Length: 466
DNA sequence: ATGTAC
Image (cartoon, rainbow, N blue to C red):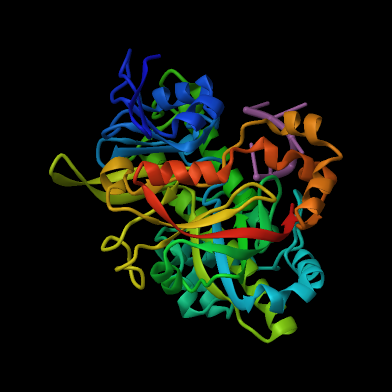
């Protein structure tokens, strides 16, 4: 492959063979050399071969190997002539992040750190097979799929401000009728649970404010205690992805290219439309899943401190969206696939109440390291369809991490003064901070590439892991 | 990520 550095933070992979557009990777030289492997760059090139792709196949500095598309990958396809690909969304549909601000200072919170963390661990079920979530009926589940956070508001699990502080209002229009019974059943027992792997709940302290105005508009102050949640659509979204990948494999409608994992459908084909509809149902499920965790966090903080934490923002980083973008002087409708990549619409493009700032962009680091709140820069609309990175990005596989760090992660967290409540020891080792890229470097790279700029930085006080 | 395998 021919990869060229075209400026300090941009690499171009030239078009070759049947690539329809070039590849563009935003990264610093150091991150590119240290952490970006040939396999994930090959995936950027494979995506560039999919019909209807517009401008380029993009990747963020946290890029790593994924199913078909790289994680950290962004690709937009013509909404009439292009494709939609389940691998471009990923198995965890609307995996994403929410951040709440508590209004408490670190000093006010500190004496209750352990008991509050233990309560959060007990009230928000975590782990692979966690089935202790909210009990909902099948008709409730159907309304969750159709209406997302509107359902949560009708059931007193959300307030109006939560909807305006969630991407797409936490409610994406769909019919709710293209999600299999098996997927619905998995969802019914899992709504309100955290999950496993890199999913987490973290209590944090704001360590740095880089932009005082935006931070105060987002409801964040220095030394304030925040809570961050990273979770998605659990078994329901996974089943939707599994179902449609299988249906595509068995269909003569499918678009097949060099990589079988990139199996796709024309957006306007019946399978394409059904997948998008089911994906939107799963996205609504994930918005509600995060909202129930937010609701539980509020209960715990109200009980211990008499305060009601406010939602800063809740967003998706695994999703495909129909959006309008300016391309070569005209505005066109596209299906933007963001897989391990975060929408970061700047001011004017963001909806109320963030029209004049841009909406908050939440970037978690690895366990025991910092997280960031960013805001999109105007250039990102033409550089990445309004997108930035989603987190640190793995550099070691789970099994490599366990082999190297078993038995020492506990001590490391203790040394950093982070109180950990993991569901299993295994997950603690798999998620060893050293198996991820350095989030400070990833954020520096997206700032350097003019995709987003830092507003605030948080450091962990305690962590709950599936 | 995931009732950890098409």
